[in-house]
Amino acid sequence: MRKFFLIIVFPIFVFLISTPAWSNIIYLGVQSGISLQKPSFSDIEFNTDTTFLMGLNGGFRLGGFGFELNYFQAAHNLEPVDILTFDWGKRELDFSYLGGYFKIGIPFPLIFPYATIGYGYYTANLEGIDKEKKGGLSIGAGVEISFGKLGIKGEGKYHKVGINFEERKFDFKNFTFIVGLNFYIF
Image 1: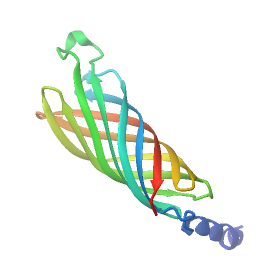
Image 2: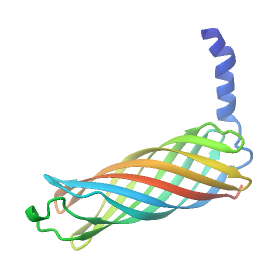
Image 3: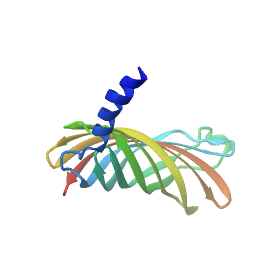
Image 4: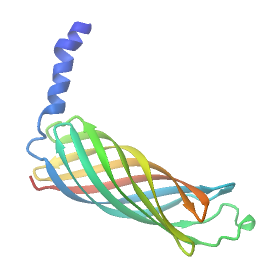
């Protein structure tokens, strides 16, 4: 069984990963979707807020490997679960991300399923309090379907970052579900 894997399966896998993705290498794109955010602060829980997000991306892909720069922005409302114990009111949180992702997948002729891991900077602007930036990791998975020089992608990512506002740490757990268009320029 081990010889079968080394002689047959491994070379096929290496071929699929290393072949060019049918001449689509460098791309620019637009994306939109939804952002589900669940912040917490000390013993205070906030309701999950779902909102629209929009952004841009660009990168390159060669065979089964790729790198992508990604930017998105979403405006969330922070509402405590128990309003009586915390005088907060409704506050808006402008949340944005700018970072890079490594992608690995299998480049079939029209479809590219992939996994991704990235690092970037999260900027949180909490209305009336402060604006902070913090670096953090995110992971995700997606699929892209190519039609010549146009690619349609769908992906989901999980982001987790802790941001200090005036020495008070907020933990943000954020899921993003994005649909986008990639335009291959080379």
